[in-house]
Length: 419
Ligand SMILES: [Zn+2]
Image: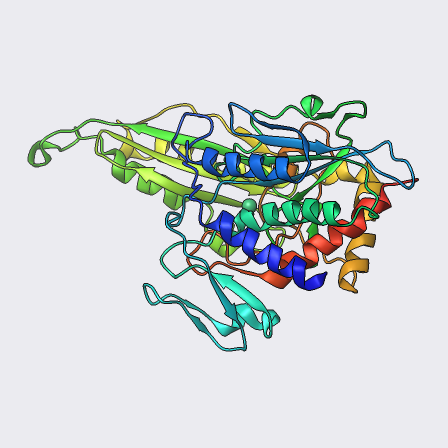
């Protein structure tokens, strides 16, 4: 059975990786890119073939379906399993050509653009089957590795009728990478007929095999807009209001010790992610991340202080900074999960059964769809997908990590019965 599962996982992943599903930060539409429907429709067809009921692709490109519970034992739970279909727009994401390497050690040199995955990134996976791109695109293991695990679980449940499970609600979302993954999802609508709405769930996304998370970032974003005016530079004395220099000073005032590249573990940051720069109009797009509310207050104050410093600077007297708001994106899910200890405990038991070692958990320097669902009160810890070096041309996924994920889910399902 292991070999059949291994083959299924590898083939399924490669099939999904080849479908371009990059999302778009700037798009106003939902989904942010229409091509995400290509994968959504493929998944809907495959769910139907796996006997999943109620299969639907919403106008917003959310794929859903469910399996009714089966014994022995009874369960009042309806367990959500979800992953995201889009891939990051921050690296080339079209024409992905997955390559399977039987990894024996050393650097992996990819065929395009001289891309190298250094040996130290791969240490844990010697002797395994590592899937990469061809070097000029990301791979999309974030999060097609997660989708692969859920689809392979459903395939296994069909092969092995003796495995009991609670009511399962499957959901694949678009646009996670642009922070809009569950924008159109209302928890009260995630219902298995006759069994009610979802009671808890698991997001399969990111991280090494064996890693699970209940502690994610709290996230806000904002855009700071500068307005000035243009004058002939030869006659600009005390007249020109140059928003490019004002914005540069603003960015320079942000705390250098709280940037993505200077923080780790549970430290918070402000990230000047993107700028539009011209003399008369400039803007900087910022995201703020922290694990605690106190740290978030501190990061927001740092942004306000930077704006105040520019306003106070004589040179920028004629540059206007528009009032800006901090817009919430998602919340650290730890509080909600602590109120539902069974969800976390079952996960830890299943991980240990499947991997032979206790689950490993770090503060996750990111958000998940689970963190967005936590804002609606649903406990949805995050489970590894196996993807490494996400959002980059050096991204890779060991097939073995995904297989372990499926085996863990097979252990997890019966733990919800007869409790
Ligand atoms: Zn992801």
